Amino acid sequence: MYQVPTLSIVFMAVSALTGIAIPIVLFFIFRKKYKADIAPFFVGCAVFIVFALLIESFVHRAIFATDVGKAILNNLWLYGVYGGLMAGLFEETGRYAAFKTVLKRKRGNNENALMYGAGHGGFEAAYLLGISMISNIVMSVTINAGTADSLTAGVTDPATLQRIGATVAALAEAAPTDFLVGAAERFSAVALHLSCSVLVWFAAKNGGRRLWFYPLAIFLHAFLNAAAVILSKNTSNLLLLEGVIFFLAACCVGIAAAVWKKCVSGEEPAVPAEEDA
Image 1 (cartoon, rainbow, N blue to C red):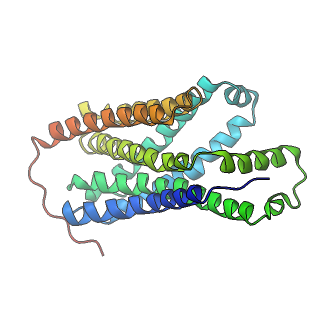
Image 2 (image 1 turned 90 degrees about the vertical axis):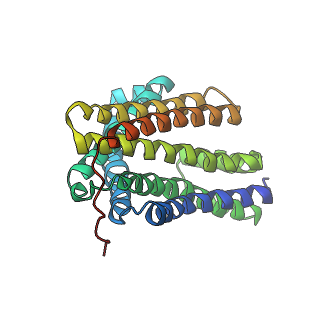
């Protein structure tokens, strides 16, 4: 019954490659141009895995199994605010913990904040965009080969069958350009991660009156995530949605740039760090 346009599959591949390319390109830019250390990149990847994919996901499952969780799932505004706050709390806390512990000896080079952000946000891009688009490609090829029945082979749960059917229909009926939206969104998301990394970096490094940069990062992360979720369910205009998200991410970049300028203005020149092994 369905056929996925070839151009849609091509754009899925473009998005998947974009997600994979983002962390690689950022790594080499910050390493070669800004002389950042290697370790913060991989610490950023690890923190995203531990705090977002493991701990945060575990907490979500526990909460959504309760009556309160079911109420959150059934209310868009509650779901958006809840999801944003949880993402901000866990990911920014992971950032802060990393900067105060395993990266404590790397804080002499402020560019390491950007390298960390490239790892944290870049891994998220590769994981979310890369995996989702590869899954879409596999499903689309299966549909176009006329073997879509294999997608539901052995599945008896009505809800699962309905979900698979809806996914098949969505892949076939979506405009090809819709599959580029995720790639565009990742640039805004990575900009947010770089910005929050800068804020939390100086909160962890300087403390005192600058400790409030840490809760500020939580707020900005939560606000942008919540806005993305709520707006996505209230508008079908993808250009408008991405425009708003891009604007909010640009504001975060502006705040981070101002904080960077203020914090480094009175610092002594950093002593070049030893090359990572």
